[in-house]
Length: 289
Image (cartoon, rainbow, N blue to C red; front, side):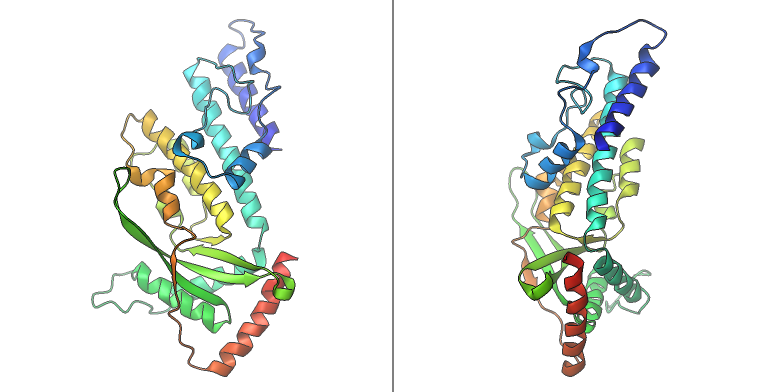
């Protein structure tokens, strides 16, 4: 399906710029030896790329055999349509895993937003993200889920500034509890990719992202790879410098598997908490059959 999308994109671009002007039998645009979208998605999911690896060559894309086309408009169209198809494919896979659990967790998040969750001395109108995370964790644990606050920390280097980031992790398990599966919850996922002076194509990609991410880290890292590559391209097209905090290596440190995990929940009713946890864990196990 994905490859067909790219072939159609190339066909539209080719005929738009060349049809009626001159006949071109260039075999470079046939796409016979190009990597399929399936292969490209697998690369993002299975491999740990360096910054240079993550950059997609729009002239090669999925619609050529590696020989470049010099038309900048075709390159522009191919790149952004390819990135959109790649992102959509990853998001489809993300949505298909743990859908019932994701729906339950999102319901709990909305419940938390509707409460007076901010305990700051001078609370903002919408409440602070830190207090919201703590409130969500409390409600998740009240429902019987194993939820913890994760804190990522990284030091300042020549390549990127130091910093910290907090997110939520829920530990689920397969049927029979033979394997534990961590679910990342990032309450402000879409906001992580907002860029003030981005091109329209990049903004379109950002709008397709879930506002709140609830899912496996594999898909999160794949999305980060696609979006960081697109951010770099957007800034290049705008002839603007891209900050080190926009690079993939920096962004992925926010949700590192080496993050410190903190339990901040103290159940008020131990019996009800254990009972609800047993009930919900039975439901969660069905997600991964």
